[in-house]
Every structure is written in C-alpha cells, then in structure tokens.
Image (cartoon, rainbow, N blue to C red; front, side, top):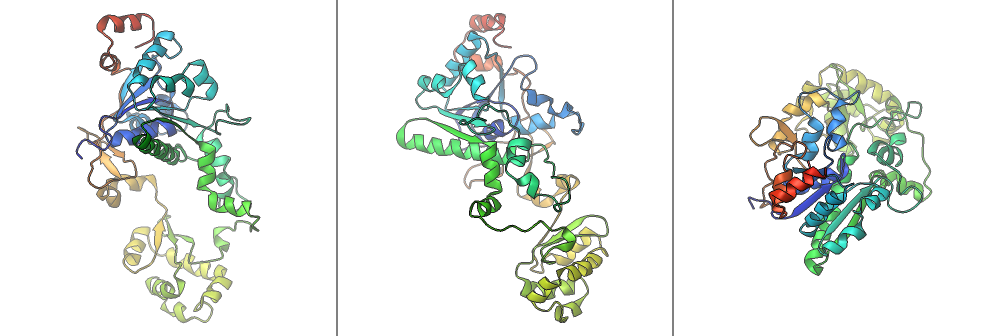
Length: 401
C-alpha cells in the first residue's frame, strides 16, 4: 500500500512534549493525516526543549523534528470560546483525538471525553497522564524521569551497585516506549470500532508503563521473593554474562548463556585456549564459584584490543555478545541503515529515527520535516468549511494564528 494503512484517518494531536504526540507520529508514519494543535505565539512548549540548559546545541530543532514530522500545525487558542468551537468542528469529522493535558485542564478547556464524545460517536479519544486518572495523584504532572523512571524502581535498580547514586535518565527514554503503548491502545480501539461501529476512550500513563518495563523484578517483589544486593561488575556472579573494557575505552558485553558450548570458543578467541581445560574453569560450577578470578583474567584479555578488533574476532563464532553503543556510532551504523531504523527526511539529506514497527505489504510515508507554528492554519480551517471571512474573524478574536 503506497499511501499507508491509515490513509484517510484524521488525527488531532492536542498534546505536548513527547509520549502522546509520538503516538500520533507513528500513526502519521503509516499514512494518517495528523493535525498538531498548539497555542498561538510560542506554540507547543516542547519546541523549546533544545534551548534548555544541558541539551545539545544545533541549528536544527532536533526534538521537534523527531516528534512532529509529517504533521500539519494549527495554532489555536483553546481558552477562547471561538477556539473551542473550531476544535469541536474538527472533532466532529476526525477519527482520533490525542491529549495529555491534566484532567483539570481538559475540564477547563471543555475538551474532556464527555465534552467531545457526543460530537462524534466514532471518535477514539486517547488520553495520556503521568499517574493515571484516578486516585490522589491523578492531577499530578509527570515526566518520564519522575513517573516512569523514578517511580517504577528502575532508577534505583539500574546502577552499577548499591553504593553508587541512582542512575539519571536521558530525554525521552521512557516517553517513546510509552508512545508505543498509547499507539497500541488507539489501534486496538480502531479494531473495536471496525467491529462495533463505535468509538472509545483509551488511556495509558507513565507510571503504568514504568512498572511494566520493570515487571520481572516488580513481579518478584509481589510474590515475596528474596533479593540480593546488586553486585559491582568486578564481583559479578557469572563472568560470561558481564561487560569488559577494551583497549580504546569502549565496552563489550558478553551474554554466553550456553556456557558449556561457548566457553571453549571464547577461550580460543582471547588467545587463552588452555583455560577451556583449566580445572578451575572447565565446568560451569567452577566458573561460577571462581567468577571473580575469571573476571580478572577476562579484564586483562579484553584490554589488549580495541572494540572493533574484538567485534571482528567474535562475530560469526556463535558467541552472543553486544557492545555499549555511544551516540557517535549511530549516524554510520550500517545495520540500522540497512533495516530502515534510520531514514532520510523527504527532500533532505537529514536522517531521522523511524518508528520501530514494519508491516509487510505497506510502505511508510517518507518523513516530512515538521511544521512551523500555525503553518497550516488556513488550509486546515478551509478544509473544515471555514471561509475567508470566518477565518479573518477567528484571527481578529485571537483564536487562531
């Protein structure tokens, strides 16, 4: 399908920052027509993210490029009755409405589910929150750093050992997985609509997705499992499921779960064939009992070559390993390019990151660069039936820009 599975699907992205708008981005990748609704003037506050202290500097608004590709921008003041009237007309002819405004804001702007559902009984109303829409924290703002990363236990768990400080998150690391959950909810509701003819309200939140991401250990806690303290790398219980620093400072990560078969191969690769038959390490029980000793040996071995050399030596030997990637690797990662993980913008040599799903028999839209604030306001309003006089009146009222 050249035009995408969702050709003709009309989506209103009335959200800010990452998780909810990114779900709309995935819909747009598969052909949906997405209108980004943002305030006149400054637009979505997310546009300003790269200007905050500590973020990389660039002539390109990389954050906005990622979340708002393919979309059209309507600058609409939803605090004004005239702006709300425009929204209602758009909702009446749309398929999906996406928002992450807190419940009190949705109520104040008259865009809660009960406000919009009567306008269109086929509407999928997708709302995303920090902590869910019930309970004492329902109205509490949340970011992926607080509600996904910190609240879920991952911030505490993902650190080198118990003596180091909790690990900080990086921008969007929870928001983008959460976007896929919201996308899945929307698509499930669209399937339900195909069967019933009726729309639905769908929900997801950062906290729920965070606990889902950490659910193996969270489930262990729920059944009363006994936990051990997290051990530092140098004292890992299994030397063959550990990471090692190479000569150039890069890290390689072994994950040799089929130890009995893979240990002799690794011993040959590091030039220490004798270790395969060494009484200390020949059997799995010995390797585990003397893991600290084996870690020290592997530390010394991996420090003799650069990461690129180790990848060449180990690839194709049936050994499961990875390496700690750095951002400098990504632009020229051949495997990512060959698998369309990285794709170029339309009419540009700038690359962007593809949404992580593919469906045989359909092509994703070639990503278009994101819109300026209100770039498509007139076009969107005309398509919704507003004539030039009505558009001028909206502008005079300050409802549209």
